[in-house]
Length: 449
Image (cartoon, rainbow, N blue to C red; front, side):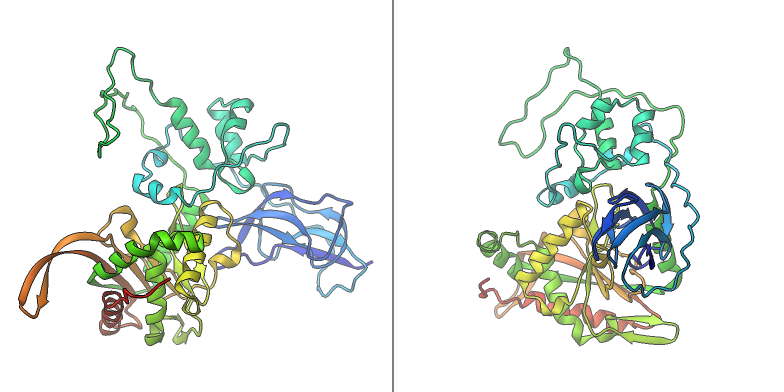
C-alpha cells in the first residue's frame, strides 16, 4: 500500500521549527483526509497539522515536546490513495526535546506588567477556562519544571486558571500564581486606610518591608523573546532607519467617537476604539504612496498589490506579536473594528493561526495605549515602514480663526513614522504623515455608523 509521510508544514515568516504539544491520533488509528493528526506550537501560534490523505497511522516519528523543523516528517500513514509525494518511507531521527528554561525565583516580569496595558486588555481577555474534575490536563515541561522547583503540588497546579489554548497553564499564569502565593501578608497591628469609593487615587497603605536579595538573578530568555530579539537586530542591521514626526489635532474625531461609541457597541457587538479608526485612515492613504507598501529584494523593489496592515499587539507576558489584517483597504470601518477585536483577542488567548501573522506589508503600533507621547519603532522586516500612534492628550493649542489667533483646549497626538532610508526619502516619509494628518483633522463628523 502507498505510504504518505505527514510533514511539518511552513508555519509563517521567520518560523523554522515547532514543538509537538499533543498527538491527536495514535498508531493504528484511522484518519480521514484533512483530519488533524497532531498539534504543534511555535513561538507565535498553536496549530494543528492535518493529513492530506485518508489512511492508518503506521508510525509516530517524534514524541510530545520534541522540536522539529519545517518539512521534517512527523508520522507515517498507510493509505490506499495515490500519493503525490516523493519520499522514502524511512524512520526520521528523533528530535531532541526542548530543554526547560531555568526557573526564576522571584520573576520581575509579572510585577513590571504595565497597569495601563492590563486595563486596556481586560475587555479583550477571555475568562480562564475551568478545569473539569477528572479531566486530564496538559502541562508543558517548563510548567512542570517550575512547579517542581517551587514545590507546587498537583492539587495546587490544578487550581491555577489557564489562559492558554484549551485552558492550558502558561508561564505567565504560573508566575502570577507564585507572585500571589509569595506576597507578604500585612501585619494585623498595622492599620489599613480604606479607599473612598469616589476617590480617584488609591488610598494610602502602610509601607511593607522587603528583604533585598544578596545575589543577582539570572533569567533565561524565552524562545519567543529570542526570536523577537533576533528579528529586531536583523532589522536594525538591514534597514537604514530614519524617523519623521507630526502633531495631529484629533478633537473632531475624538468628539465624533464619543458620540457614536455606545450605539456602535449595541449595533455591532464590539467596541469602537481608536485603533480601527486609524487603521482605516492609514489603509485609505497608503494607495497614494505605493513605495511605502513595498519590500526590497536585493536591488529589486516589490510594490505589493494588497494592503495588508500589521497591528502590533502586546501580550500579557510583555512580548509583542503582529497579527495582519489582509486587504485592509477593502474593509469598512465596521469590518475593521470587528477584525481588530478578533485578532487582538485571539493573540492574547494564543489562538492565532499561522496565516494570521503572515503577509503584512505595512505595520501600525499604538504606543499611546501605555501613555507614551510617541515612539521610534523598529521596522518589521521585510517591510519598509512602520507608524507609531502616540497618546491622545488635552493640550492648549493655538488656533487660527477669522478674528485672529486664539488659544483653545484641543485633543492632540504625536505620530511618528519610521522608514527605510535606502528606498524612502524624507520627503516621501513626511508627506505621507502630512496626508494622514489632513485626513484625520478633516474627519466627517456627520457620518453615521
